[in-house]
Length: 118
Length: 192
Image 1: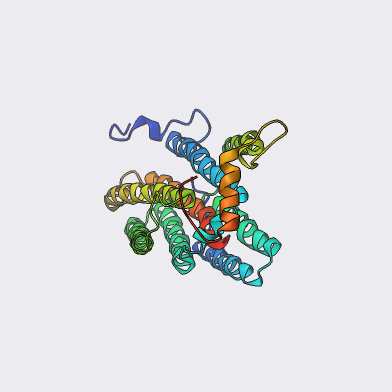
Image 2: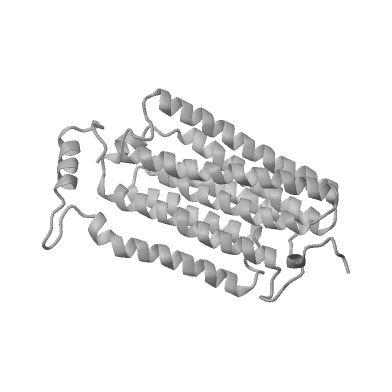
């Protein structure tokens, strides 16, 4: 593929990536979960898309490559959506996961202890 | 007709060179591999709040340094690609070795990190957080090592001005290794 940019463009993108990294490190220092979420994970998404677009040349690649990657992300989303109701809770409408409940209680009463593998 | 050039280099049935298509398909499979691991971690991290007691022991400075190292190595490999595109084989060769240098630096820092954590008693079987930590970073490190080996082989080809398109292919793979770390870093080092 001859669709490469001039070297300075790559250096500028690299500079932006480093600035975004600095922002993601500074964000948690405000000790607000929302700010941490945005600066840590939001910035990670921006950085990843910058690398994909400009370093991997995804913006000049055939469109179906992007569609293929979106399909893979969809699969991950399905994994999350399909398992989250069971895995992210200790109990449901007609079930309880006693092992998980005990583990959470154990760590709630003994803060900082890491006694066993759940 | 160049009988020494593999046919796959020139086949474009799908509109892009077959080698590049193969790398993208490989990356697609890696997306679900690392994505699945990260999602599995996220699901449990949101449930087990006490994991923050373990997460506090990861070394953010080492993680941030490794992020800088990998981002810089990504820059070097894309500059290698640009040089290869313009048939500047010597330049491409040195940029590839700068990238390899970045990868080796990453491995050294990771080694020190793991050594320190293991010395403090945080191992693969300490608890589920550390199991995820070592599995995710270990799998990523394995991909780094594989990438470095392939990059070294490609650099030898480049020095002989052969198969210059391989620089782009290993470059795409290396950028993916970088993207995975871009997500692992906030997950394991920032979100404490």
